[in-house]
Every structure is written in C-alpha cells, then in structure tokens.
Amino acid sequence: MKNLLRILLRTVLALVAIVVGLLLYVQLGGIRFHQDRIQTALSDAVGFEIAASEPLQLDLGRELELTVVNLAVRNAAWPDSEPLADVGRVRIVVDAWSLVSGPIEITVVELADVKIGLDQLDDGTANWTPAPQDVATPAVEQDEAATAFILHEVKIDGVELVSAINGEPAWAGHVPQLMLRLLDASTYAFDTAADAAFADGTLTGNAALSGEISSDFSQATPRIDLLLTVPELKIQTANNDEAEPDPTPEHEPARLFDDSPLQMAGLDGLDLSAVVSAENVLIDGDSFRDVHFDLSLENGKLNLNPLQLKLGDGSVTIALSLEPVGDNYAMTLRSEVEQLRVASMAAEGQDPAKLPPLDANLEISGTGSSLHQIMASSNGQFSGRHAVGEVNLQAAGVLFSDIISSITSSLNPLAESPEYATLECGIYRLDITDGIATVDELAAQMDSLVILSSGTIDLGDETIDLSMRTKTREGFGLSIGGVANSFLKLGGTLSEPSVNVDAAGSVTATGAAVASGGLSFLAKGLWDRLSAEVDLCKDDVPET
Image (cartoon, one colour):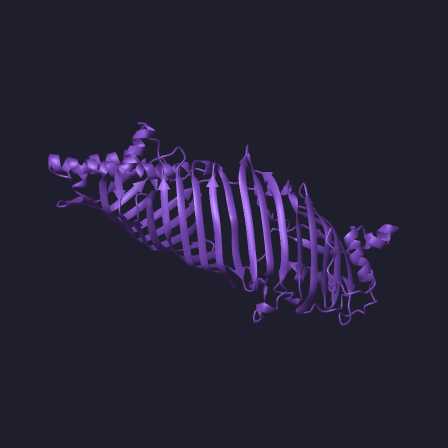
C-alpha cells in the first residue's frame, strides 16, 4: 500500500517535470531537443523507466497541449524488463497563464489504448514496486508540490489489465472507459464500467461503477474517502461438477480454511473510509438486492460496519473487524440471517421459494496470522433453525446428498435414495471454545428420516467426530419401529466428510451412554422425544 501511495506522489512530481520541460522548450526553442532530458526527469520522479517511441508534440497558445504517442513504462529492476504499462496516446492540456500565476491548472489528462501488465513472484516482489529515489525529497516539499496542481478532468479510453504470478496468467480485466471530474479542491466524481475473469475460467464478472473520491496526502498517513454506487454487479462461477477427479491415488485433503499468511502488512500506510451501495448483485443464480456496507481502515484496523443485503424474502447482516496484534491479526465476526433461501442450492427447474428458509446467528473471534490459525484459536457460538421446505438431495451437495445417501445405504442397502426430501425442520447449536466446536444440538427431521447428532468439530485440523442417531419414518423403506436406535459416525474432514455405521459405539457403549449416546442435556431431550415418536418440529426447543 505504501508503494502505491509513493507512486501517486511521484506521479505528481512527474507532472512537475513535464512543466519544467515545457519551460525549457519556451526558453531554448525545441521540445524534441529536450525529449531525452524530459524523459529522464520523468523516470527519476516516478521510479520507472519512461520513454516514448515517437517525438513529443507540443502546441502553444492560451493552453499548452502536450501529446505523447506510444509511451512505455518499465521497471528496470524487474526480470526481462517486461513493460508495466504501454499507453497508445497521452494528451495533457495545461492552462498557460497558470504557469505564471499559479497554481498550475491541468485542464485535462487523456489516455487511450492502455495496456497494463501486473506481475508478481512468490517472494512478494512485484513489477509495480518503483525503484528507490536517488535523492530524497523532504516531506514538506512533497506536500507543497502536491498542492501546487489542480487537475480538472481525466479521461481514459480502453484499459486492458493482465495479471500473472510467477509468469503464469492469473486474471485479466477490461475497463472500456473511465471519467474523473473535479468537484472541489480534493473531491472527484467518477463514472466507469469494468469486467474481469480468472485465467482458469473459474470466475468472471462485470460491473458499472460511479461515485465520488477524495484524498488528503498532507498528513503522515494519507487518507482516502470513497462513496461508491453500483447499479449492477454480475459474478459467474464455473460449474466444476464434471471435472475429472485428482489422478493421485492418495492426496492430502483440501483445507476449508486457508493457511496462507494474511497479506495485510501495508494497511497501516493508509486510512480509508468507503460507503458502498449496490442495487443488484447477481452471483450465479442468486440476486442480492439493496446491498450496503461501510468499510473503514484506520491505523491498520479494518472494520465492516456492517454489510447488509436482501436475498428473496430473506436478509443477511455481517459485521467484521480485523486488527493487527503484534505479528498476528485479531478477527471478530458477527452474522445474522433471517428467512434465507439460497437459489443456487435449488435443482434445475425447482422453485427457490420452496427451499427451507434459515434463521441463524453466528458470533466468532480468534487470533492468528492466517485464516486457519484464527479458526484454530476461535471462540464463539452458532445457532440456527431451518423451517419446512423441499430439498433436492443432488443439488444440495455434501450437506444432504452424500450424508443422506450414506445413511440410507447403511440402514437399508436395497433402498433407493430419493431425489427430493421434505425437510420439516432443522435445529442447530454449536459452542466453539479454543477452536473446538461442540455440537450441543443438531437435529434434522424429514418426511422420511430423523437425524440427531452430537460430537465435536476441530477447526484446527478440520476433523469431524460426530455420533449420529437416526430413525426412519413410514414410507422410507423401513417401518418406524424397524430401526429405533441406529448409530452412525460422521467423520473425515470439513472438505471431505464421510459417514459409516458406528457398530462399536452401539455395541460397546454401556449404561447411560446407550441411553443418551453421550449427547448433551438438550440433545438428550431431543432424543427422548424422538424415542417417544414425538414430532420434533411441533414445539420450539428450549434455549440454553
């Protein structure tokens, strides 16, 4: 972040170099004669090699108009000196009288056919990091230089961005046009559109953007205030259901929580306030409406205050804080959902309104240098309840399809897994202590099967150790009295769960363990109701 701010400052100094070049032309008679000198001054100011392949053009009059064709920007320290940017045309118009009266008024800056290549290596070095200046400029002089300019308008036509990591393409983007217009001394209005896609095709998106941005670089920590309006944002993820399995016979299960260090070290170099509103955000089959959030960054602490959105008849609220603590980060997350139905979980042709709505609350906090470490140290609580709805077991993925199919096969190998099931209710409660989530209540009642579970989930190594009791209902291939006390085991990891018959648990358990299965007090109460063939969904479960 500090490097990017340094680039902005040096760009201002580059404008000073342009003006110096203009004055040299007026006094010594020929901008082409001084082109090498001007390019050297620009390169020293910005920290990159800047050169035009064709002679500079200057028109004199009430306004000074400088035109540069085929401008290349390179990082001399970068391997093979690949271009950071190629600009087909640059046009800068300066009010001539302001060169004398001050401050210097830049009427317009126009750029066309811009190609930007962002390259990064594993060690964190990147081609957008400028070379250090040979001569340090005192902070006071930098501030005075920054305030000596007034930039009225910026027009950019056609920007292509390509990003690579270790030489391999990562993502590409396109900005057809960007307009930036001065409103007052430090605030600009902007209007643009953009689209982007990952190189592997897993994600594409496009958006229209408008708003206002203001900056203050006079303080030790620069500040940016942003007001952003997004009429529409579309994001499409690739369907990898038919992707070929990993050919490696034995592989390490994928982590749900990334163990890569959080890249937040530069956040203390900028204070930011952003208010973002989006009318419609389309993500695959889901349409999120009235999206709004306030984002603040101050002294390296990131706050989301909060994110609010609507989805169908439901709503979501998320509040997040991430604060540096020594070499780690302390995270606090709070979330609440009401009547939430996720359309992307519906089967093809299924009405999303028939999905079971969810009401839930989550509070969790932890500390670490990565998301994995944060979750491994986390404390908090999750509680939720699903109301009645129709679930397509194929579309629901691991949560229902794999688990329910495994249970069906375990209880009755000859039974066919139904395509649809009616979830009459789901009751969930987890308490998280030092990265261990203890399942106090987990019950799901369907038209054909009831599941009750208890156990733990280790958020550190992401292993699951849940004991499950099941009971079939009429019409599921077994009578309601056929299997009254079936034990199963849900194990594996969060990314690769597995279900097995827990024969040892049902045979070797003794006394109270047989009666309660090691369940918590509330879960034991649910099992008592289940054993008595009472409908779990008729009455609310008492709160702890």
